[in-house]
Image 1 (cartoon, rainbow over the protein chains, first blue to last red):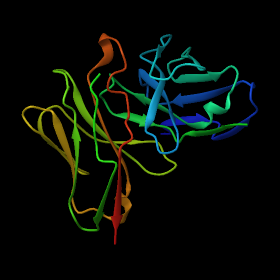
Image 2: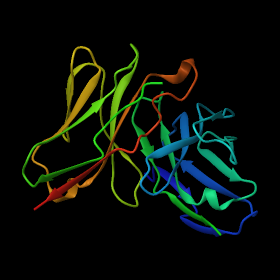
Image 3: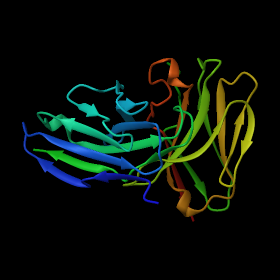
Length: 113
Length: 114
């Protein structure tokens, strides 16, 4: 059982480039989330989804877009990367509402130069 | 939005019991209290969740007083491997909208020494 898998694990982008981070879960979870974590900070919620075909904004959504076309996948897109988006990105999923146990991926370390 | 306050850091020694308290003065009636643990270069890991009174699992205990304005995560007999950041989250089901309770603060950096 792989749990939550993030692709890629590392990436370096130039300012203005675009990319998509992929999150896949094999636990048939309804809820999925994208967070970013900066040095010395907690995790900040970017976007989340309560089911296939749905997305909602979190605490820091600007500069990001998401899609949940399939239940098992949650994609995070950066259309025009900026140095301020240098961060570690974590994806998570949970079976029920926000207060059932959430499972996190191993993170994607993104550097924008 | 229920805000939480935790100590930034704590130190303890192997074999000791560690208690980390989280304040959440404006907790709502349907809010749950959830704790996560995070090691460096890893995603957070669920530890325990509770609504009121006391909850215990194989890893930790969670004490919640009657007024629910605070909670205490108790780690029995800690070891060096318990050195991590611990996050307290407060919120309820967001089926009614919003992402309350999915917000991680800066957490408590627990350092266990030999």
